[in-house]
Image (cartoon, rainbow, N blue to C red; front, side, top):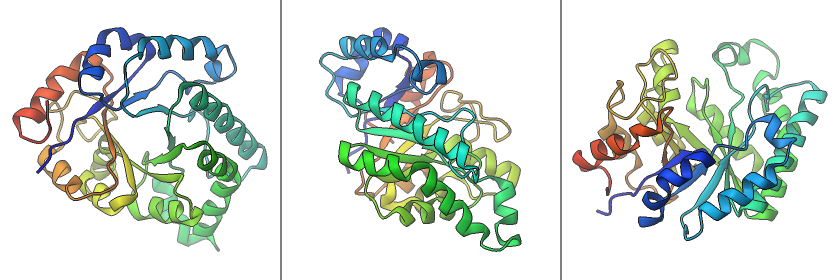
Length: 272
């Protein structure tokens, strides 16, 4: 069995430190310097130029984290939907300038939705319709641009809701992301399934995974092994997928990358 090689989520200022590590195995990279509104409305081309210079020689798969602060793709307010659409367009401009082929966006579902979608007429359908109004244009543009949008679980309780939402678009340009730390938190707080169940539910719709550890209480983004996630279960759930999801460490303290790699290597779950 071929073991996966994992990459990381980094800011542009981290690239000098981790450039050689990325290039030695041509690891997947998710740049997280482009989601803030100040960046989107500012001179982001200078950041793109710096990133491209630092990544000279990197041929691994490149993506970005898209905008999410203050945005809800399931909002029923047309004014909010217009803002979401504009922010997605700005981020896709950045993808084009970088040569990025994937962008992470956030799920609209919350525990309140989980408990109340069936408490109102067409509650489930309305969230889907609002998401189409917010990101439908972005999904079509992404398809034309060769970018895949991946919908990350944030406060999701039922992993199948996100899958049904993605399926409703009928586009290869919208797929699923699983953040195992988020799943772990909702498992403890809302009795959601454990993180490996989220991966299994996604199946070959899974194109991206955030690897981070938590205690189940808060979104810690700790180095792997510092929390309660059962890593063998995560990687068993990934076995057999043909979608080749990008597996990237998303750690608050990037100094935890080497220890996280060592842990997974020592467990026989990845190639170092």
